[in-house]
Amino acid sequence: MTKEPQQPDHSIDISQMSDAELHAALQSIPCQSGEDDPAPLVELTGLKSQHSAMMRCETPLRFQATGNLGDYAFAFCRDADIRLDGNVGHGAGDGMSGGVVLITGNAGCGLGSAMTGGTLAVYGSAGDRVGSAMRGGSIFVRGSVGDDTGAGALGGTIVVGGDAGDRLGDGLNNVTVFLRGKAKSLAPGVIEAPLRKREEVRLGLLLMGASIRGSASEFRRIIPKARLDAEEAGAGEIRPNWR
Image 1: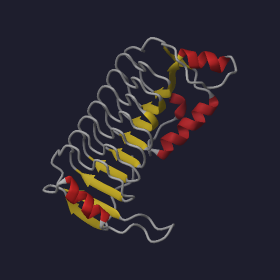
Image 2: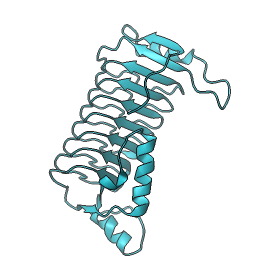
Image 3: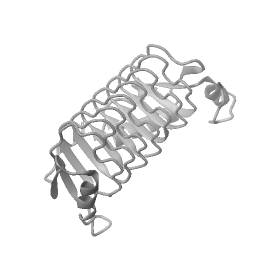
C-alpha cells in the first residue's frame, strides 16, 4: 500500500467549483523552486462523485483526496501525481498521457482507455475493458478486472493481481498483460507465455514503482501467439498483425 497522506501545503474545496475555476486555482499555485524540492501537495476536498473531476490536469503538482469521484476522473491528465482514497466511476484515466494516479478503491469500466503514458494504479478491482485501445503507459489493478481487458491495445503494460473476465487480450498487439489469477477465457490468437527472466525483472520494477507488494514470479505473461513465435524464432519483439 502507498504511504499515508501527508500534511498538505494547500487545500481546495471542489464541491462548488467549475472546471475552469479549478484549473485557475491550480495555475495560481507555484511549483517547486528547486530541482530537488518536492512539488507542493494539494488536498482536494468536497468530493461528491462529480463527473470529469480533474480532467485535463496538466499541472505538475501532488494531490491527495478522500472520497468518491464519478465518470472520467483524471481523464487526459499528465504530469500530476495524484492519490485518491476512494472509488471512481467509468473511464478513469481515459487518454492519460503522463504522471501517476493511485486509486485505493475500485474503478468502473474503461479504466485507462486510450492512455498513452504514465502510471495508473487501482488497489481494488475494475470493470470491463481495462486498457482498451491504450498506446502506452502502465496500468495496475491489484484486484480483479472484467471482460475485454486490453481490447485493441497497441502499446503499454497491464498488470492484474486478481482474475480476469472473458476475452482477455482481444486485439492485443505489442502489449504485455501480466496476470496473477485466472482468466475466464483468452481471446483468439492470445496465449499464456512463459515469464522470461528479463520480464520477471521488469515486472518487479514496475510493481515497486506502483507501490504494489508481490512477487513477480507469481504472475503469468499473456501475449499474442505471433509475438511468442517471433521470440522463439529469435526475431525479438515485433508488432504483429495476427488477426
